[in-house]
Amino acid sequence: MLSAIAIVPSAPVMVPELAGAAAAELVDLRDAVFSAAASLPLRWVAVGVGYADAVIGPDGAGTFAGYGVDLRVTLSPDRGSVSDLPLCALIAGWIRGRARPEARVEVRVYADDHGPDAALARGRALRTEIDEAGDPVGVLVVADGAHTLTPSAPGGYDPASIPVQQALDDALARGDAAALTRLPDGVVGRVAYQVLAGLTEPPRSAKELYRGAPYGVGYWAGVWTP
Image (cartoon, rainbow, N blue to C red; front, side, top):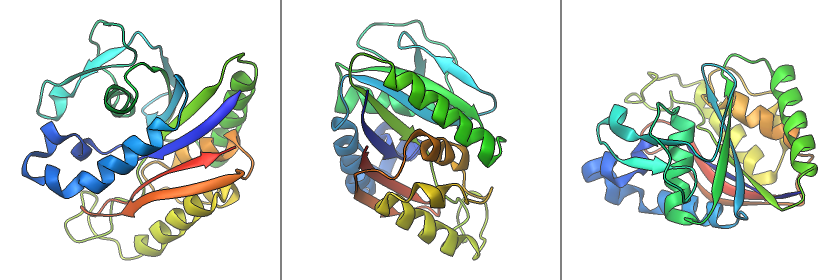
């Protein structure tokens, strides 16, 4: 049974050990992310994007060494052997350890080149799996918006992406799943958001906890209640 959906960024800069001096600037974002994740039950399915579809079980563990600090994270309270996890799984493990240490996370990675129809189909298939579960399941969507919002943004500056980010933020705040199906490729987490659209009809409620683009990348955090 689908209990709740938390939506959070996939930004390594949220991790204080990686952010360095910028860590203090992101307290509001981290607090919002942890609050969203705390609304989930003890069984999570994390949804993110990568190079190919993959399923990573709760025994997974990884490290942020590739991002500059050998900070280990796990997908459950158990000690798994460290492997090369995609960023969405690392972020899910880090959030779990800080917001709900007793939780267990299975990560579903979806290829970032899926078209909208393929992403929607995968979201519907995931919902069927969750509905067949006997216990409450929470979904953690780990995804960024546009990464071209300011001249210093990692993707360069594209003024046309500003209204795209505004529309994405508004859709997430309203629980407008249909609007997510129309996202352009310039949205980094497009496929994850479109899997979300397939996962749920318009939610009973949507709560925004954070929106912003402190480094030229659109970040949104909040909770959808099915």
